[in-house]
Every structure is written in structure tokens, then in C-alpha cells.
Image (cartoon, rainbow, N blue to C red; front, side, top):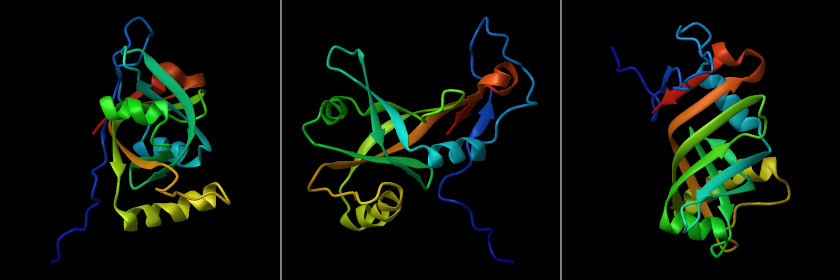
Length: 166
């Protein structure tokens, strides 16, 4: 019997976030599936991107990007504050645009330099943001792979608050 084909990235483990004093359910009932989070990450047009300034305070900016193969991809000019922040500290946070169905992804940004991979990513990017494309001549292209993510539905917050560990 042939070996079962698996994804290059396993589905993360779902559990409850540690948020004392908010009445978060301790039951597994109501935990959001990772598929729910990925749907929202794929559908967002704008994302909130958080990096760290040299004084260690947060820097938040809206960015365009795409969610492909369980990672977030975006581009920014090499001399922008975001790029300079990531050059010093690659840890970052990416959030979808809908706070009432929030997905918050913590990870590390890594610049993608492989021209073939950038061309591959350019197709879904151009479909999402016509007539724009990913162009490494215009700015660095980054990949953010999640280490932990959080999701919640505002109207059902105590029972839907979910943390995924990768």
C-alpha cells in the first residue's frame, strides 16, 4: 500500500488562549478549525502588519499580501521602516482586516530571494491586486510562517477563542 501523502505543513494544534478574567471556555467544544482562520487570511484585502522599532516599541502599518501554502507573503520597499525593522528583528504579527472575526498570526519574516518562487507567488498576488505584481526590483518580498496564531468570533468570544500552535 502506498504511503499516505501529507502536506508540507501539518495542521496546527488547537487549544485555548491564556486570557485570565475573560471567561474563556475550558472545553474543546467551540474551538475554531484552522481552516476557518485560513479562509479569513486568504479573503482579507488589507492586513495589519506589526514589527518592532529600534526602541522595541511596536510599529503597525496596513499592507497588501497573500496567504498561500500556510504562510503570509507581502512586499515592501527595502528602505521602508518595516524592512529596516525586520532586518533587526524578524519577529512580527500579521492580522486580517476583520476584528469581529479576528485572526492574529505571530511569526518570523524571511526575505524570499528565489526568482521562481516570486514568479509563482506573483500570480495570486496579481489576481488579488490588479494591475500590481510582486517585483523584487521595487521591493523585498517576505514570507511569514506562523509559530502561533489566535482566532475568535466576537459574538461568541468566550467559546470560540482559539490558539493554534505550529
